[in-house]
Amino acid sequence: MSTHTESDSHLPTIILRPGDSERLIAGHPWLYGTSIMRFTKPATDGELVQVKDHRQRFVGSGFYNSKSKIAVRLLSPERIEVNEAFFEQRIRAALAVRQRHLPGVTSFRVVNAESDFLSGLIVDKYEDVLVVQISSLGMDQRTPQILAVLQKIFSPRAILERNDIASRKFEGLAERQGLLAGELKGAMDIQLNGLKFTVDLLGGHKTGLYLDQQVNYAAVAKLIAPGAQVLDCFSFLGGFALHAARAGAASVHGVDQSAEAVAAAVQNAKANGLAEKCTFETGNVFDWLKTHTLTNPHEKLVPKFDAIVLDPPSFTRNRDSVPNALRGYKEIHVRALKLLRPGGVLATFTCSHHVDAKMFQDVILSAAFDTRRVLRRVATFSQSPDHPVIPVIPETEYLKGCAFEVVR
Image (cartoon, one colour):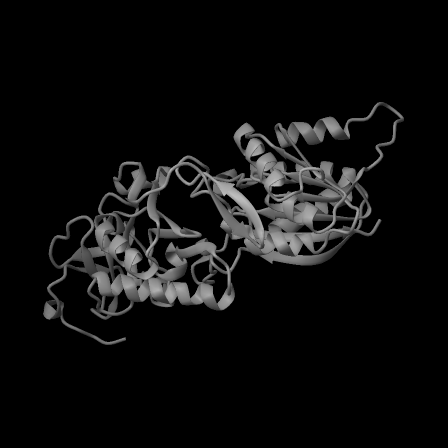
């Protein structure tokens, strides 16, 4: 790391408090306002700034925003110019990672913000349509440059923005959604692992689908025994359900609280010729599991499923909500284990960054103890490679999963 004087750049320079540079030097891109000792000259919100430690050693360049808790989102440990060439180099580098780890896949996340050193920018590719989601002011101000690069690299039929996310308000940004370029009317069909899914990119959930489970859909399907009775909890558009049905399950029942998602899952089952095997039901999963595990005094519950998938939305908003989340996880695992036959498979996931893999497994083992079940772990899962994990940025790792066989 070299030493430079304050006058070596036209950019505003932020000088850090002693001891506050190590995390950034290690590769974490977020600089909090509390770490700033002083500015060499005022910086405007969204402007590119350079960051130095208290000894004037260069740490990196990034976008500044006084309105955000994250005062600077670092983009590079070097001096950079942020222009179309910068975005083209970064997005092509991100695309190369996907092409290496997901060859032949046509719908995937192209840019995953911090994972691809473009903090605040997400780009999802659904066949020939791109969906952009921007959560930082610096990126938002450079939307035209980003769009120009996306047009150049992908020549998409349409580019949409799904900037209808609450986190934008922390950056002083309004929510927006709609068409940015090209044409798209209504829902469209995409391919995941050779199955067809209809997605509503403008009105649906997130940017349309959970692309982070794409690899896991296929991995879990391999664990389903021919002729199995399968329960898919929090089934959404039927990702796990349809993969299980195609893999040879005799019947799959999906439960989700969204009537819209259930209607879409039913249509997806029909479109793939799997309607005879798949049923879907609108309902609160907690209530559904409770109802189906209730017994009268002296009555023994007869488990009726050979495989159960638990893929709930995140139960945590922040660290304070972890205890409540763990209680929720414990409850659904206790009830699911009661419904699983001996030898059955439980595939279970958490998408909360605040619940780590050990914590999650401890909850499952606690549920197994309460139900007098012994489990054999047969697989562990992470997010698909288009959502890369950078260990020095813990926030990039959120999806954890395991599969267990009920030994007894």
